[in-house]
Amino acid sequence: MSEETGNEQKTGMSPPKILGVFALAMINVAAVLSIRNYPSMAMFGWACIGWYIIGTVLFLIPLSLAAAELATMLSDKGGGVYAWCREAFGDKGGFVAIFCEWSNNLVWFPTVLAFIAATLAYAISPVLQTDKIYLFVVMMIAFWGTTTIAYFGENVSTKFQNVGVILGSIIPSVLIIILGVWWIASGQQMVLPPFSPGEIVPTLNLATLPFFATVILLFAGMEMAGFHALETKNPKTDYPKAIALSAIIIFLCTVIATLAIAFVIPADDLSLAAGVMQALQYFFEAANIPWAVAPMAVLITIGGAVSLAAWLIGPAKGLGVVAVEGNLPPVFNRHNKYGSPVAVLLIQAGIGTFISLLYVFLPSVNQAYWILSAITVELLCIVYFTIFAAVIKLRYSKPDAPRPFKIPGGLAGIWIIGGMGAFGVMFSFLVGLMPTGEFTAAETVSYVLGILIGTFLLAVPPLIFLKMKKPSWVEEGAGE
Image (cartoon, rainbow, N blue to C red; front, side):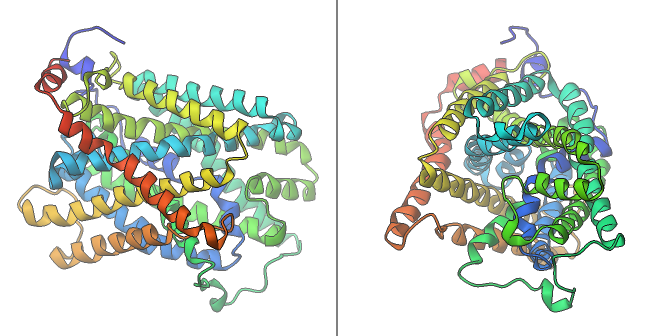
């Protein structure tokens, strides 16, 4: 921990203005554009278009617009989601929102780490996917490596994300799209039936409803650039442009690349864990270039690491601002000379390492893992509902505050956009309580209770910390 004096260095509250439109857009793309989601959507064939449209209308568009208005309105405040929700609902609302966004990561980290390790195995030896020692070693290298990058502040982490998201997310997505076009143009057989408008309409029933929550949150992360408002050169103009650019890139890459996979692999044969590499093997073998699988595995591994870094850094910065303001014990308020919240980074790395150990070496806890995964969805729903509620409330409580970007349509517009987003996440919260096929009917009650209790336990700590708050915490935060 740095012992240097000076408010700017210790808290990171006045960092250099180094981020422009492209850098901000890449932060969002890194957080949202996840190649590992393509196979699960490709299983729906043409109907994946309908599912993506539902997610776009009920979540991506509302969140993008709400984040643009809040970030430009509060561009002089650090903390992203914390600053936005605190402005509307005070310390409790802001603290709960950012803590839920941070705590859900603790369970999510091992899943993306496992994806990174399993994908890299294709570049070394595919049989390593089942080697627990290999999985854990690679997971820890990726986890602590990205934590180390975050330690060196915005300048280093932004460069990593800018390069990494192009190499590991955009290039593989574009290549999958190009291969899909080549597959059709070369006369290869498509496994999907002929297209018709009715094919894109999703089937909504009790079996597909739990999937609704997954679809809505496929675009989670569009608020990540907001955590970097203090490092943005001109947030009032750059942030809305970055939001628009990232939303277009994410939507086009996601929809078209998913369809390209659906063209090639029958839904019954599609592996959710390795579907992307499975599709690439199909493509490359048909093109007589099987050697290309290994380098693509390396690129997609980089994309996984970049996605991990975006979620690892953003909420940690928000929680660091909470600590600086004296709402957490002083142990959390440790920033180094690069402005990074090193205490929060180390705490989350320690917890994430422990959960990764359980994930790799205790596979028998499958049902418990499904419950934890469902809890991450519920926690994110709390975060996003608070964001949509905040953008509506601030139109009433601070109607005259400068808003360089403003959701059009006046109060009617804000209610339509904020209302659609709030409805989407509330419905996702409810269907997220529905059990998966892992659970019998007799286990349903315990499953639902497990999710509700777990969500409560991971959302309530901010209220406890605020009750325990001491004047000395504020004094130390101000003095850091």
